[in-house]
Image (tube, rainbow, N blue to C red; front, top):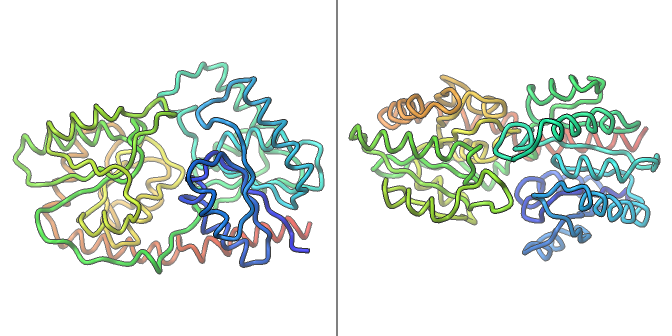
Length: 374
């Protein structure tokens, strides 16, 4: 009988967007893949992959004690019924609640993927210092569970986990879930005017307000540059911009807000380079996809970003929350086609060698197999 792996994620769209290549690799390797999440619009798509869906009733934006306790019992029942060989919790909330639900079930190996520290530690969430200390304490205990491994996406997050007292040998750096380098191919530059693009949720922690500020400065300087924003607002995130704010900014500064774009190749076919002003990332999928399409980047010198946005090689980098420096870097890259071509070619080569779905798939399957063998 094929070994079972259960992925626990907050939302169905997030699983398809950020973990699908990993789950496909597990299926190809002979695992029976199950997905536990809150379903909105993507249950059919998950089933079409040959995965088994399991409905969860939790809310991504809430860590209330009562709701968390209910989710733990819900997951505990599922684990007892399904009896997976591996439980793979993805992002902070599933790590906390999924690991708690698995306590005492020693037959289940646990993989905990921390995809970034998120708003709980660095963002706009109205969370007390006591709550943050509580989460740190819980992580320091749960991540030390026998037959468990913690997966992080950048060296800074690995250092954070080890600082919690987790054994370094059990903390693995696997950069993301991989990029489909066959579907996302290097694209020729579009015709003028030069266009920059940001892809992602419209969040303060993603630096959207800093980016808009930088773009408005360029307009005042007479720099000929267009800006595309591709992504939705996120009402469950306390740092999300409101749609009416974005519409006002778009009208005021001539920004093109596209909303959600199903095929990201459409964005990079229109844009000459990518920009990301994030305060911190696990590993930014938007920059990986831009790099796969052969696009140069302007990004903050922040954890996660610097794994793909390498100063002078694939990108120009700037300090966090520095709109003036961001504007200068955008103007410099907009005015230098040769630099864009050089950075874009280097970025594509980096993705092919380090971040492809095939490479990441091999790493994660090797981890699963090692846990099964033990």
